[in-house]
Length: 626
Image (cartoon, rainbow, N blue to C red):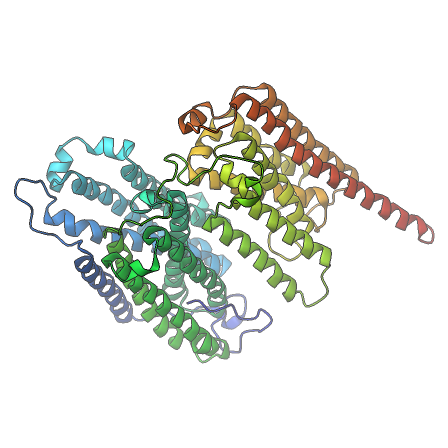
């Protein structure tokens, strides 16, 4: 379902199944067991039928063994893709159940979230089964022989494929325990935390398989992570709305907005991944892998049609009070198509892609992409695209402009300009030249961190996002010391704990680190600058001290980097770039460049804050009796 959300000013009609607190907002009673069983059977048949056909077409079905060569048995050949379908279905149902707890009535959030427990447990079990069957496939041994070989612990702990599903299993177990523990009882807060954890848990498999060996594996992995997350939220969210909420208007509106973003993210990331793997659109037609990709594109188009149909008819029926039956019928068919698409995706992962010709075949082994010698001009001209970053920044800019439009009144142009400028700064910091050279050159990393953690967030905060309800700051986090701590803590964690080396070598850790500094920086400046109303009153002198505290943090970072031990020594040594700058000198340059940029930004903000304070005092002075 990919329709845009209904206008918030349109109230639900009398008799519609809207969400609490209106009297008619309770979800309708559950459907008869026979209907639920029929839908479940349809979903299962669709998934496994398409899986079998696609495996047969792509060459993933069992074949007669070649005499003298080992081969996995039929149980492994059939069981591995079947278990992967169950694994993906349990993951989507877990995420969808937790999403339903956030989209439904607040008083039932904990109860709905607890029903995710069995799905999460099934997800963990299927991840462990995937470990065993994958190793059986690698070793070309039967499952009993694999278990008795003694290789399983090594596979799970030391081999990327085993490590990925070990992480999935552990995180899924944490979700299963969490929905029964204290987190599941914290209103919407606990389910929100568990939803984030569940979404993270679907990502590790993106690091193994075809994407990890693609011509530009960082771009391939990033696009696949975005694709998997979007599809899981989309499929799971629709399941949650249909099976657990039974189609109330407000929940459908909320999911409709999410589904539109998921549809766009899945389509965009899928096209990027297909381009990386095939290299030429013509190869869609001259390989079985390409033809299966075309089938997946057709399935995405079909799901887009379902979303359009929902918007044209079924959501209108919900809003007019004609009942939820049309929505539920169409949504059940949509879920069946989604299940078939999951089966197709698993079969595609078992089909060897053709070797891309030309393009990015000579990427650096550790960096994962082509990197040319660094000259200053290339910091302005080189682009290192990342689908997750592009989608996040574009989404933030679009959400801001939509929120401004919905205010219905005038909105300061300077705020729109500030938010747009912040988005552009983040875009350059995260996909521009400093992003391309950041993992290889420390000074580029330092400049990137200053732009992503200070300059960009400061501009975003000047855009007044809290006033547009794009974000919220709780009362504890609005305390000046708490906000300053949020800004300061990432720096010692990065440079004093060994996290820097991991962030340089791991795309996922690097993206997570960048997300943290953007969020914490925006939080700090939203509190320190006072453009938005906050849960507590903070005077200008306190805000000035907050900015001075941020300046002290940057001075400390500069001194640490200038005089301290070398950062990333082992990582840079392993890169062996012939054009790499002298490491000690480059770190000293980074110590001046990164904190220097941040200090300039903070100084400008201090001047603006003090000027605003003087202007306020002058206005008070000219008032009668002032």
